Length: 292
Image 1 (spheres, rainbow, N blue to C red):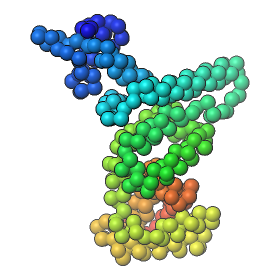
Image 2 (cartoon, helix red, strand yellow; image 1 turned 30 degrees about the horizontal axis):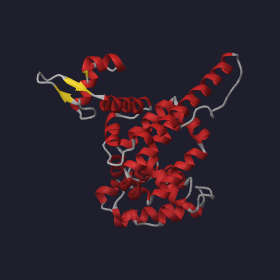
Image 3 (cartoon, rainbow, N blue to C red; image 1 turned 90 degrees about the vertical axis):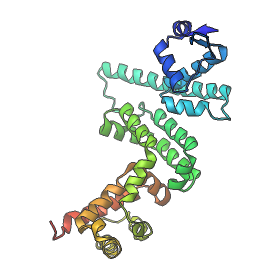
Image 4 (cartoon, rainbow, N blue to C red; image 1 turned 30 degrees about the vertical axis):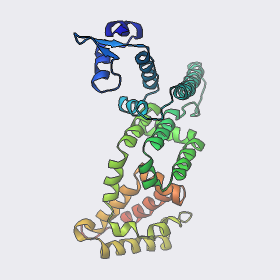
């Protein structure tokens, strides 16, 4: 048995952190002395080691706790997976160092393949296993979600380039996406609540998306947009519909949501949401309502 001070000295984890782990139920001491001092045995130290590996990989404490508390948790299998992820992380760091060395020499290297999304992809895999019901509810099936992950892997360089342009770095992008995953249900409920139930059943949106090879400004496409707006005007309560500008902006916002795009595009083809947004934006800019 080791005291909390001895564990802190051995592991480099502060006594206050160990106390906090105890408070949240992440790592309980093996025993308490009659005086209330915490004592830790070898099993507790092994668990602490596992926690530190997960932390190194960027897992949040609440997720680590959930993983360790699973009845089917396999410590050896977890070590194997952690090793694979750390190797990916090391390889990514090595590639970034090589890229920086080339840039220091004045080489022009407009390459984004070094900025891999392994942390984000790992977060998606974790989300899939720990939120199965939500995945099936919003994506339709685990297989659809796997297709979504595969699309990110296939387009990793392009996604990385856009992530850097929009968020400044892969790390910032990954943190933003992890936040979205942690609050996925809230985000989806908020977005979907903006579209009345009648419109969720309206296959005119699918019809619009099926025309994505055509110009959004074409008469045929814009007539579908007008049909959608007319349908909404006749089926959506006026306090929700507002005027047609309000409605168009609502549709643009809803179909611009990253995760709704992922779900809709997985089911109906890449670029479907962007095309719907483009078609409604064209309508909004060229058919201003009279209610400004």
